[in-house]
Image 1: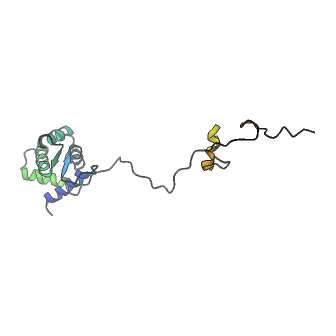
Image 2: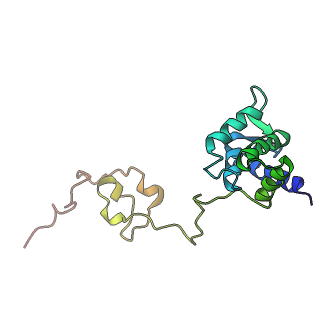
Image 3: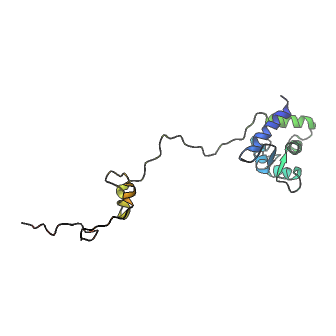
Length: 172
């Protein structure tokens, strides 16, 4: 496999990273900067993030938001000439391709999905008050729709009265 085809595969992997609609034929500035950073082209001393952004704007077509692989090659060639000053352009491109070989977009710092068996328990329902308390039984299980229904009391007493039915009971 040639260095150029390996570099093109790396270009495609970075072009589709985070872009669900991308086919891997064109790359935006964000992914170009990520490729340069993850592959070590953007090392911070001779090639900075400003250089990468300027180079992207220089090689892209007017009014375009993305670059093709050919434009990408022009950009990394110019960045490489800045990085490897005084070297043969073919060797510069070869060095850049070696840095890109087999690289994938890094996902450090990205939130990963948890693999817990079950969800955490619900809040402690014993601390609920008022109408919320009526939606749960003593064990904390929800009553379902009956906890939400409005129940009419036809006992003759007010609904909140605690001593319902105590009138007929006499103390002896």
